[in-house]
Image (cartoon, rainbow, N blue to C red):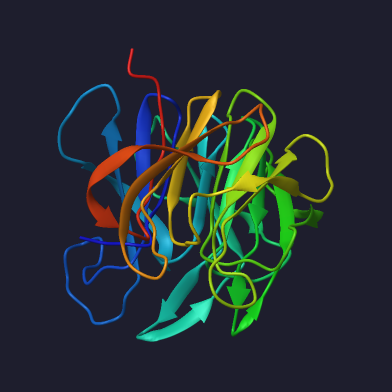
Length: 267
């Protein structure tokens, strides 16, 4: 079992990377909270996850997004023994091919508790925190070209423990909820992934909360679970092309937060 896992897909296979656990990838137990485990499922087929490979190091509270071919995993915490260290590392795996991740480059700012969104080519990493300092930083990479991230713009506020999703085939990315400088908030913001610049206001969530996960089908985005300041089981939804507030979609089977979510093609 693990939380703070980071997930993404190539439309047919979904991978879940790292997170908080009490086991290493080789099954040996330890007391620190990071894991290097990567596992995957085939989205069209129900069943348990299968081992995929390992991250470069035990990682927790990172962000993950895909360009349709690669899974890009960035930031978060790594560990020296049981000592937690925030990192700026970006690493990647080819989703169709099981195996360990490879170094890609570095974020512009070392941070954990960040989010990521993609338009299928460019991936933008948003917000986060490092040693008590929170950021409104947005930086980006092109997923098929290894290298360091480049400054993109700024979020509306410093933000941690928030969620994000991009259309994968379109160009609008959504960032929602999270913890600003204090407390929780209900703000949804958006930006065009292909155009550098700051985010803008989109609308509001149904309540103030953080630690939710997100996915989309290129038309609608859904925000799943969260904490604000108690566990919730709510699924909320927006139409990505239309500015406005989120609406209730339904419920997940139990209240959760700090989970991972991604979407794919079930055909």
